[in-house]
Image 1 (tube, rainbow, N blue to C red):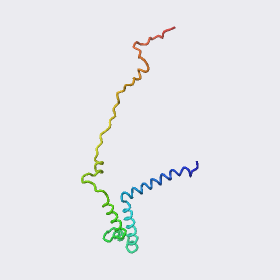
Image 2: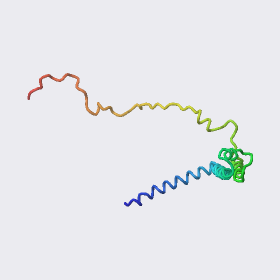
Image 3: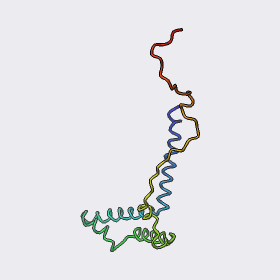
Image 4: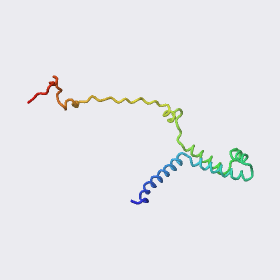
Length: 136
């Protein structure tokens, strides 16, 4: 088998894991977080061209003048939050899982109906072994 043949299954596995990770991020609304980070990066680059670095950072994260991408990310986040199913009050599963106390599992040795090891060997000798061996 050549080196290229071995890399095929590994590459497919890595690709499937990457696709699964991207799907999980999309399902959890991380896409809007990525859009927000891109918006902040663009705002910082524009602000850093005309202001000092400290002032550019302050102006970028000020929040008083959001750019179009920031507004789009906020609208998308709000829409995703509105579409999410409402959770009943006081029934947060994550909190229950964190506070859940499990009982310890102690296995018991079952009573066996099988014959014991000594039964397979034979009956043990009751009298002592003669000291000098018998001669025939």
